[in-house]
Length: 321
Image (cartoon, rainbow, N blue to C red; front, side, top):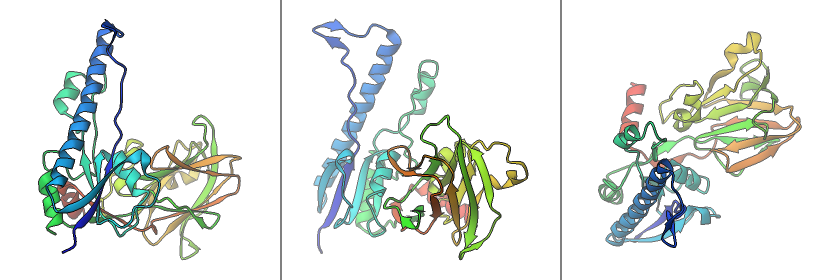
C-alpha cells in the first residue's frame, strides 16, 4: 500500500514585547504584565501543540511536509490529507487553496479554557481559539489521526459559496461567509437583490440602503451571522442564509431583509456604489466591485470535505430527524 501524503499547515507564531531589557523591566503596569504573561502562554501552548503533532506524524507510516499558512500561495494538490494546526482561521485559509478532492482535519492548538476566562473576566478577554470546525486537539489528535488513516472516520461535505462578478467566477470560495459593503464601514451601501431559480425570479426585486449584505453557509451561520441576529443552520445544509445589515427604512420589504437562498436558487445583486468590496471569510481576501456590477451568489461551489467534531455531526442528524 502506498504511503499517505499529508500536508501540515501551521499557524504562525505570535511574538510579544520582552518583559525586560538589560535586566530592567520595560513594562511596569501590573495588568499589562498579566496580559503579556497570558499572551506568552498562548504562544507556548501553540508551539507545544505543533511539536506534539509533528512527533505523532513521525511515528506513523506517512510522508508529510510542514508549511506555515502565511507561506501558502498555490493550490493544494497531490496530498491525501491536509492537517491544520491553529484554529478555525487556519482551516479557513487552507480551504481557499483546496478543491473537493482532498479532505482536511483541523487541530485546535489553543482551546479556550473556561476557568481562565472566568478568572480574568474583570481584567481582559481571555478567550483563546474557538475551533468550531476542528475535530482534534492535542488531547485526541493521535486517536483521531489513527481512525482516519484506518478508514474508520469519514469526512463531512460542507457547502461553500460561489461568487460571480459580471458572469466571471471568482477563484476563491467562501467556507464561512461573504460581506458585500463599502470599504469604509461608516459609509452607506446601495444595492438591489432578488432570489432567482433557473433564471426566473423567485422573489421581488429589493432595493436597499444599508451597511452591506452578508451571506453565510451553514458552517458559517454560527459566526457573524448569528451575532447579527441570524440563526444556526444544520451544518450539512446546502442552503445559504443572507441578511441585509442595518437596512434604512426597509418599509414593506422588511420581511425580505433576512432569509434563505435554497440550494437550487441563487441571489442576483447589483451594486450602486462608486466603490465596494466583496470580503470573503473575513478581511484578508477581498475583491473590488463598482457601480452597476452584477454579483451572483450561490452554493454551486465545490464542497469541502472536513473531518468534523462528533457533536456537530450529531447535531445535524438531530436537526434533520
